[in-house]
Length: 392
Image (cartoon, rainbow, N blue to C red; front, side, top):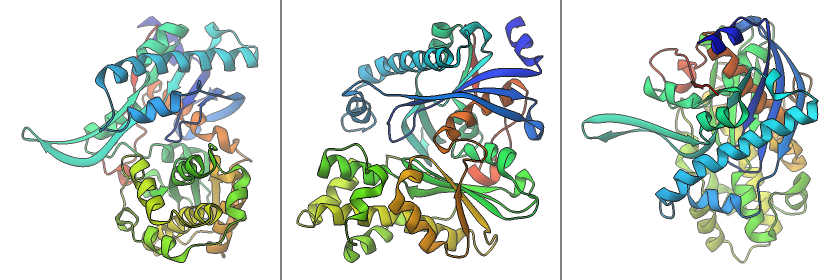
C-alpha cells in the first residue's frame, strides 16, 4: 500500500507511543522523532503527556478484567471506548507539541490488558497461551487518520512465548553498555527487570516480571486511605514492618518460578489484597503499606539473587515507572543492592515516559521489518515481527 511505503521510506518518522498499564492510572502518550531502526535507531522525545481517565472508569475496567464480574457486552464496548480515549491522547500530545496530526507517521499502541494467561492450557486438543489487550487499533487509525500498530503481544504468544515482557528490546537498543553489566528495572503495576551483560548480543538479554510493583501498594492505599497511590512513599515511611506479613508475602510461589515468566492482575488482584487485609485488619494501616512496599523491593532483590547474580553480577541498576517516585521504595532497593549503583533512566528518557517511548519504537521496528521479541526473554520458539498494522 502506498501509505505504508511512504512511511517506510522516510529517514525520520514522527511516532506517538501509547501506554496504559496494569495500574490503570491514565494514558501515557509520547511523541517521538525516530531516525533509522534496529541498533542504528536514534530517538528524540518531542513531547510527553499523561491523560487521566474519567471518574469511575478504572473500577469499571477492573471489574471487566475479573472473570467473576466481567460481562461480554461491557468488554466489547470497552474495546471501542478505550480506542477513543487513546485517539484523544494522540490529539492532545500533538496539540501540545504544536504539530498537526497529518504530520505524524505512526501510532504504536500497547492497548489495555484485561487478561494475560501466559501459561499453556489444553483446549480442544490444542495447547493455548493467551493474552488480550483492548483498545482497537483499527478504530484508533480511523479516529486519528494515522497508521496505527497494536496487538504487539499476540505474535510472540503465537510462536510459543508468554507475550511479555516486550520492553527488553527497547532496553537493549537504548541502554546496553560495552563495559558494564547493567539492568533496567521498571516499577509499574508489575515490576520487571531487563539484564544487559556488558557488550551483550540480543540473544544474551534476559528479562522477566519479578512480581508486583505498585499493584498491591495501590490497592492497599485505596482501601485504607481512599487514595490512588502512596505519594512519595509517605505512608510507607511513617510505618513499621510487620514481620509475619512480609514472611507470608515472600513465600508466594510466583517469586520462585524460574524465568521466562510474566504475571499480572490475574494473580496479584483484589482477592489477593482482600485476603491479606482480613488477616491483618487490626494492624496499623501505615505498617501494612510499609510492609507491602518493602515486599516489592525485597521480591525484586530475591529474583536477582535467585535468577541473575550467578550469571551476571550487576554494576548498575536503572529504574523507571511510577515506583521511582516512591522514596521508601528507592531507599529499600539501595539497602538490598548495596554493591550496585542505583539510578534512574532520566539521562536517556524520562522515567514516566519510557514505556510509551518503547511502543513508539516497536511500531517503527515493525514498519522497518525488524523482529522485536526476544526468545530468551519470552520463551518463544523463534524471533518474529510483532504487531498488526491498521490503516486510516
